[in-house]
Amino acid sequence: MSERDDISGAPFEDKVFVRLLPYLRPCLARFSTAIALVFLSSGVALFEPKLLGMIVDKALVPGDLRRLWWLGGLFVVLSIVRLWAYFQQNYQLQTVGQKVMHSIREDLLARLIRMPVPFFDRNPVGKLVTRLTNDTQNLSELFSAGFVLLLGDVILILGVIGAMIALHPRLGLITVSVFPIMAFFMWFFSGRLRAAFRRSREVLARLNALFAERMGGMPLIQQMNREEFERGSYRKLSREFRDRQFEGVNLYALFHPAITILSGVSMVLVIWYGPKFLGEGEIPLGTVVSFFAYVQILYQPVRNITDRYNVFLAAMSSAERIFTLVDMAQEEGLERSVAARSAAEMRGVITFDRVTFSYNPESGQRALNEISFELKSGERVALVGHTGAGKTTITSLLLRFYEPTAGAILLDGRDLRSYSKRELRERIGFVQQDTFLFSGTVRENLVLLRQGITAREIDEAVEATGLIHVVRRMPAGLDTMLDERGANLSQGERQVLAFTRVFLQRPEILILDEATANVDQGTEEQIQRASDALVRGRTSLIIAHRLATIESSDRILVFERGSLVEEGGHSALVAAGGRYARLVKAQQVLGR
Image (cartoon, rainbow, N blue to C red; front, side, top):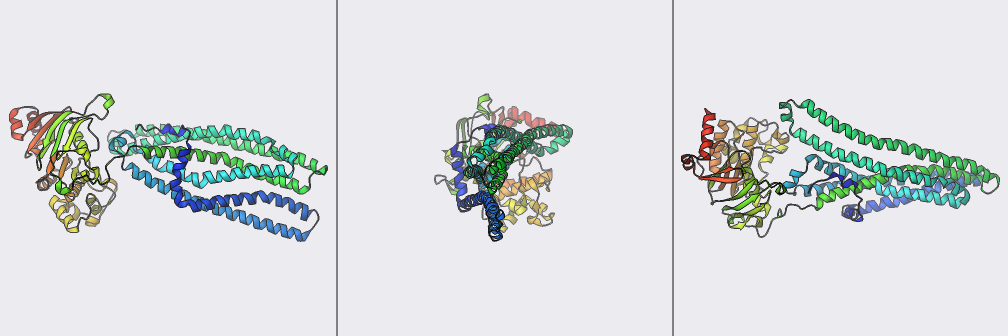
């Protein structure tokens, strides 16, 4: 997918709202209660002006104190009922909104973590965070402050207009004569407000993407002395976001005074024509008082309706963007497949048969070009070559982060795609150059890759890999909390921890992608000893720039610009005097 933020401008379809209903179903009782309370509070609000007129005509004018107490008490009781209903409807709607938002966020996150790796290559983290936070928040507001309260405002507007016309048709029509002008203002401002806030959301997504990217590259920014430059870039985008927000603020600043002026015009019409009809004996004084009260009620929902309509539209646009993500092709085969072989059946024979791969097929550039080789069961094979030669691409294809553009990859004679991705990744141990650690304890990070790991197994693993020396220096040992991405460990310590994690996984196939690149010589030797024990009897694929670490490999595959150019043992390749021999010689010269 090419992620576009502009879908917020597309008109939503009925099916978008229908798709929200499953999230609403667990809260249907609360939601129905809230709707009933909206009708109750609106009904009471519509009756109160009528009751006020009755108090004037039937109690104050005739001086009936007993009736005044009775009708006045009824007015107080109705006011309390209306306030209680208003409080309860808001409580129920806020609860529904939060529960729906929680469910959608959980569902969206569950979908996102199953997206194929190319999806994350194409979509900045900041935009995805915006989807997961801002868009789900908009959906929460749909249920807490949007749809139901919008319905309540419509009921009040129609009810007030109907009540005034029913009380006195001529005065009612005169009073609401400004309403068509008001409806035009609502239409005029609503479209422009929606466009303004859509533009601000687009800029916000870009702002979040920029912030996430720059935070991830902060060490490089500081090393290159680009702090002021990046600050300027962020300031420029932040000001653009501010300007887009001001567009909406300015429109609001015009809309509300316009509605207030029109409300005042209606009030003037009542003041002008009410006494006239009163003097002619057409209406009693209480009816004029009721009209004043109805005019006061009428224009508050008119002010609210534009805001809530925009909340409704924003929520529908957010729902459309969220469901666009939900509907995208997810990684298939993450579930356990009955066709997948058990661990005991996997021998670890890997065959690349004329495999071609391009990260962007439209560009015509190939990362791999008709690669063919085979790894025998238990064989230790090293991949070498300059950066960009295609070594890491091979491991990504083997883990099925990507699929070959052409050719086939076989595992034990079967197409790799016939294996469940979950089963496949459970059986492949993978240590990268850049280790990712989660916030949590050391122990929690060690047991991620396999269930049921015992304390004894952990103790044996940390001893075998040398992690024990790191753990002993920690204040709480294995229960020491790690900062985000393991920031309170050195790069070498993080690498040792990652190696120990794979040691505990007990995989059938092992991939080491520059696994010792970020450790000192002493730690490298320690890991190398553990590596020798780990790879014994397992099919192993080792990528290394330091060629001294792969001399004992059974075979070495040399890659250049996506093609396999040499293959053989260390001694044979050095004797051949080809590309590998030149790489060895170059490193020896640099080593001196």
